[in-house]
Image 1: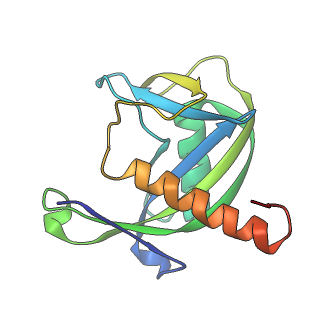
Image 2 (image 1 turned 180 degrees about the vertical axis):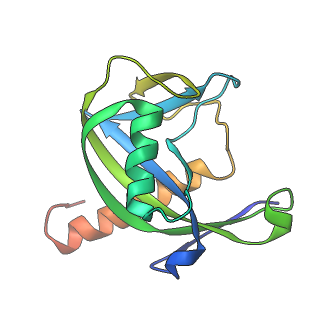
Length: 152
């Protein structure tokens, strides 16, 4: 069973991944890896010596072709799964990004991106990425309420 948890912070050295929930003009931005038939949120591994925000920016560019965007940290997340990292908890940083401009071509393992009105049905990581989106929406809604930007 895969367990996803959320934290306000953790030690920087524990952050191995950056995942970016991307939007463009109010729609979701998802990637399709050329070796898969499923959709995923942009993100990936942190390189040695790389700042986690730089990881997020690099992955967003590599996987979506985003040239102009605003990126905001949301929270730390962790995943514990029996088939990953010997069942140990692994940590990543979750971001949200609003993309204003894309490059015309992708230059990575991503075959294509799709800008969608709704979340996809076929996920690459169905036990993880929908949970990340739900938590990001919850935290952003809470922040906007505190700032008076959101009313139910």
